Image (cartoon, rainbow, N blue to C red; front, side, top):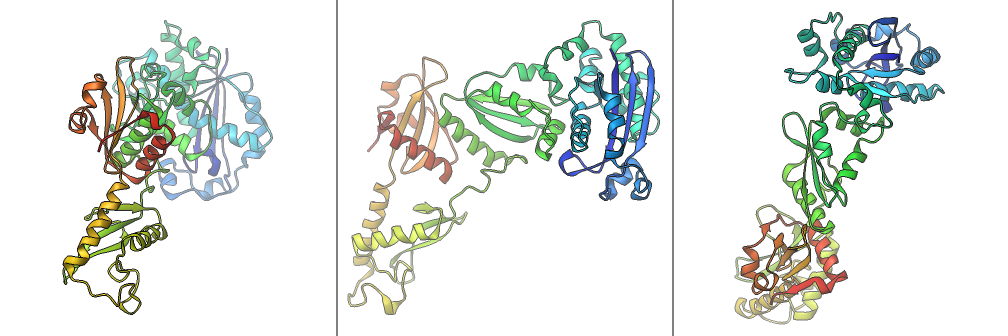
Length: 448
């Protein structure tokens, strides 16, 4: 079996928008070097200054170097019928395959990651970066962060790994379409294999233990594996592979509970790679306040952290529509609802005292509250001996959890509140629950 040990230098971290500035390929039989190839490459885009400082490769050095398309045929021939080997293989493989494809060549070879192999074959070391491994194992590592120096050092590391591979780790990784070929180099296999096939929420963490992505799934194991099941060249995929060190999960009884937990956790932990729900909050609210004359006034305003609205809306138009409905139903004053000026007031010919008017305002507030239901949404639990419960209180999400004695715990809202965990309310999950309750009224237990 022959290996092609590859190292590249690039203009950035993902292949879709970056170029290769240098490539080295070491043809290896597992014991010794058979052939060495190295060349600078003109990426035809500027090399960022910080990368110039890291690699020592500047724009002048690559100005007269061949384009990748000019060397693509030679590179493809060197890689054909070999096992593609690199330290953090998915990074190098994604770049080389992408640029070969742009040049009209198809690359479809088996891969080996020397980070993952070293963790299996040489366990217990204090680090698995190339520099730490070469220092610990006495490998000559000249020209750090240059393709030739790193490729030759990786080839020597491969030789040590093959010599010490008494358990068949290399053969196991090369067998079929082994999922480890696509896994992040720092993620323990046991964490991936320990994921359940049930519904819930999963978390990706970086080396510092900070959540970098949170997702929901009907099948946690399948969904997480899908994140690593291909070699996409976009930034998010490559950042996942590079940054993910650990995975955890929380099982949920239903998809709705997973949806709620995912939304709450995203807003609590603010993972850097979650984008879809961070801004999905109601923008406007209906507020009530007392003016200097003692009149209770209503206003539709942008949400403020310091004040709790009676009701929330995605647009100011929705808020004004609801307020005009209250004006029509109860006879509120358009001026005191900040809808019109004094000259256009709907009750300009009627004299009101604050006491008289505030009775109407209280009636409007009560009507709003009747629109905000209190109910428990009961569904299946994680286990057969329990039920899942989502409690909506006065139109807001109070919390969710699991109950085992349905008859006893649903006797009163007080008993139920002590049985579940509070959840941070927001407009997104509130609407999810209300839609679900409308679709499945038989699952609702109403409290009055």
